[in-house]
View 1 (cartoon, rainbow, N blue to C red):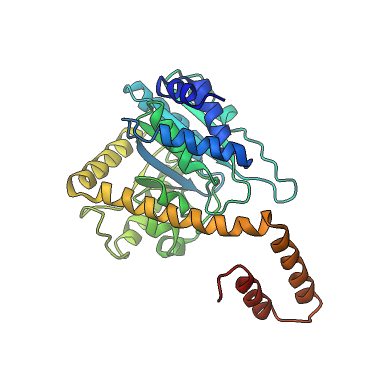
View 2: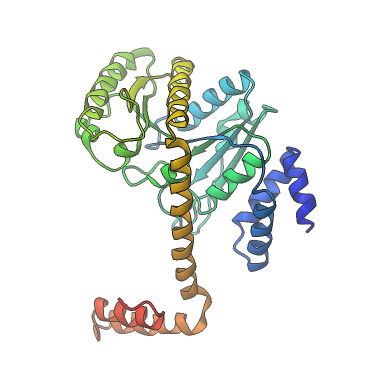
Length: 327
C-alpha cells in the first residue's frame, strides 16, 4: 500500500479512498495499525477543520431521519457533509447490521454527502473505537461538517462529547418521565436539546416536553463554555423538515461564540489530551490480550476466583502487580 498516494487521493476528496482509509483505521491487525498511523501523520497538516456535531438520543427518537433531513438542508446550502453512523454490535456474534445508508436513501445519493456506518464492537459510550480518527480523515477529504450519530443507548452515552464541538441530544415528545429532565449524565453534556416529531397530533405534546426540558436546563450548573442562553431546547420535525433551519442557526451561533471567546480551541486541546490518556489505557489493556504469559496469568487467577480460592480484590492486586501497575 502506497500511503503517500493514499493520502493524496484523500486530500483530493476521492470518496472510495476515504472509505478504504476508514476501513484501514478500524482494522486491528498490527500492520494495518502501523499503516493507519502513517496515514494520519501525513494528513495531520490538512487545512480543513470541520464543525464536528455529535447526535445522540434513545432508539426510535428519529436520529437517522433527522440526520438525513438535516444533511440535505446543509448540502443545499453548499456544505459538504460526512455522516459517521455507529451501529450497535451483537453481544453474541459481534456482528452489526450497518443499515444506516438504507435509512438515509436521499442523503446517500447526494454527491456532497458521505455516509459511513461502523460497528460499535466492544467500545462503550455510544461510539466506535476509531470514530475520532475517522473524523480526521473526513476533514482531510474536504468535508466541512461531520455528523456523528451514536448508537442511542441512554444516560451513559457521553463519550461522543469528547470528540465533537457540539453535542445535540434528540428527545421524543411525551416520554412520560419528567425526572429525565433533571438527571445528570447525558443531560449535562448536551449543548442543544431538540424535541423531535413535533408534528401532527404530537405537536402539542412536543411543545410541553420542550418547555419541561427548558425549565430543567435552567436548574443545571452553568458551564463556562456556554453563552447566557445556552443550553436550550427547541422543537423540530425531521419528517416535515420543520425547525431545522432554526436548529442550525442556534448551532452556528454557539460555535461562533465559542470561537470568539477561545473556548472552541481550548476544548479541542482538552479533547486531544483526553484521547491520549485513553489510548494509553487501551494499550495497557491490550497487553492482556496479546501477551501469552499475561493471558495465562489472567486465566489462572480467574479460575481461582471462580472456585472461591481467592477474592476478586486479591486476584486483581496480584494481576496489577504482574503488569507493573501495583494497586
